[in-house]
Length: 49
Image 1 (cartoon, one colour):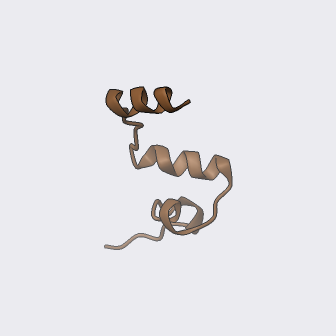
Image 2 (cartoon, helix red, strand yellow; image 1 turned 90 degrees about the vertical axis):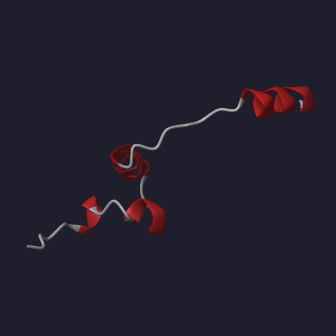
């Protein structure tokens, strides 16, 4: 069975629509997106500053 999901709750909107900051953060959280760091890249960026 396919259930209706309101547009504002469509997780794909985070990739395809202009969203408010609050809605973006809510949907991004549902995707389990996390920031990844790379120490080599960070060190290189600090040297260039």
